[in-house]
Length: 94
Image (cartoon, rainbow, N blue to C red):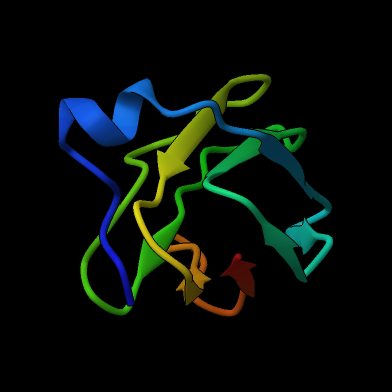
């Protein structure tokens, strides 16, 4: 799995963002594909996070807040909510 890009060159690229919601203790959609940036918006009344098996994380996403991860190459990023591990999802970066 690819960690988020941390280089200025990757950050300077034109990117598209796919929106993912958190509601009723589920990620929606549970899977999908995106160019380089994925944004998760927490519509629940409790904290969540997005944590990949490689340790990549958004940190805590408070109710009503959003967090993004930027990827620098194609990959499939499988993730869970570290607070509620029964919540799972994946996204394919094209």
